Image (cartoon, rainbow, N blue to C red; front, side, top):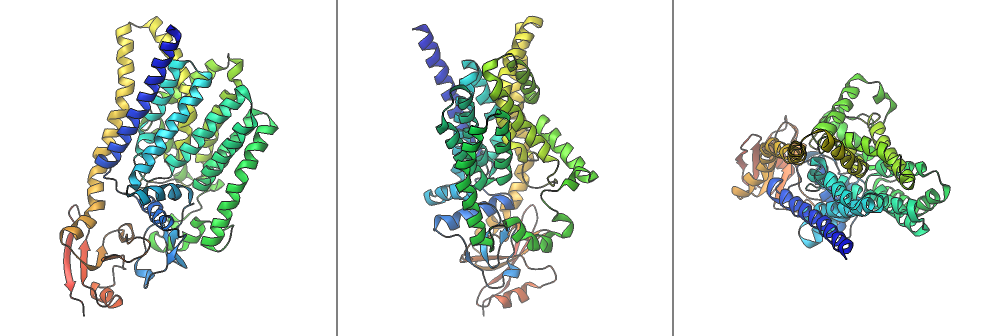
Length: 480
C-alpha cells in the first residue's frame, strides 16, 4: 500500500511539474514575448500557417512584388514560406482557433510528457521528475516553447520517438519503432536535418530490424515533403532555401547567403568562432547549470546497467551527432536563441543528466554539509530563471521597436501605403499572404521616394514610417 501511495505521489509530482511548466510557457509567450512573431523566421512560419488554415499551399503574387519583399517569404511565382511545412501545419490549428501563439506551449508540454515516459522506463521514479525539470527549465527550451520557431515542434516529435525507442530497448515491439518512425517522419516535415540526425542515431541500437521499421514508417513523410517541394518550388529536389536564395542575396548581399551546410565551415575561421560561441552559449546561458556535465556523469554511471546499455548509447549518439553537425552549418548572429540548432540535444542531455544528478547529489552529501548541498540545489534551479529574465530584459526594447511600427500605424489609424524607412525594411513589410489588408507595408529601396512608391499603388494614402525606439509616421499624400 505504501509503495502504491509513493508511486501515486511521484506521478502527481511529475504531472504537476509538467502543468506548471505549461502554464509558464503560456504566460511567457503572452506577457513577455507579446505573442508576437519577432523574427522573420517566425513570421514566415505564421504566414504559411495562415495559408494552410484556408486550405491553400500558396497565394497569388502581389502587384509590384519587388517593393513588398519580406524576410524568409517567397513572392514569386507565388507567395509562400521558404520553410518546410510541418511547423506551420501545427500552427494552422492555432490560426483556426484564433490563438496560434498557444501552439508551441502545447508542443512543449507534449515534449515533457514524452520525457517523463522515457525517464520512467529505465531511471528511478524520482529521476523522471528531474529529467522533466532539466528539460522544461532549460532557458532554450522555455524560450522556444513560447515563440513561433519550429524547434519546439521538432523536439516534440523526436522526444516522442526517443521515448518509444527507449521502450523498444526494454520490451521490443515492432509497433514502437513504427510509431517512432512516423514521429521521425513528422520531424522530417518540420526540420529535415534534425530528423536525419536522429534517424542516424538509431544505428547505435546495433540492430537492423528497428532501424528498418523506423525508416519504413518515415518514408511516406519524406515522400510527402518531396511532393510539397514539387508543388511549391517546381521540383521535388528544390527546397525553399534554394528558391529563396536570390531574394536573400538581393536583400542582404551575397556574403550572407552562404550554403547552410558545407564542409568548408569546418575550416572557415569566422564560422569556427561562431560555432564555439554557440557551444559556449548552450552550455552557459541556455541550459540548466551543469546539465552537460551531469549528462556525462549519467552516461558513465549507466555503463554499469546492462538493461540501459542500448538506450544510453542512443542518447549519447543523439547528443554527439547534433554537436558535430553544428560545425558544418553556417553560423552567425540573428533574432533567435544563439544555440537553437542544438535544441534536440536537450532531450538526451536531460535524460542522462537526471541519472547524473542523483550520483552527484550522493557524492556531495558525503562530502559537504546538507545545508550547503541544498543551497547548491536551489542555485542550480534559480539560475535558469535569472538567465531567462536577463534575456527578456535584453529582448524587450528590441520587441518594442519591432512591434512599434504596427502599433504606431494602429494608433494613427493609418490606411493605405506605409513606406518603411529602416536599416532593414524587409523585417517590417508584413502584409500577410494575401496582401489584402487596409495597410500595405512597402520595403521600397532607399533611393525611391515615397511619392514614387505611391504612384505604384494609386488610389491610396501614402505614409512614411521612420525606424527608431519610437517610430515616427508622416502622411505624404492623399489618394488621387
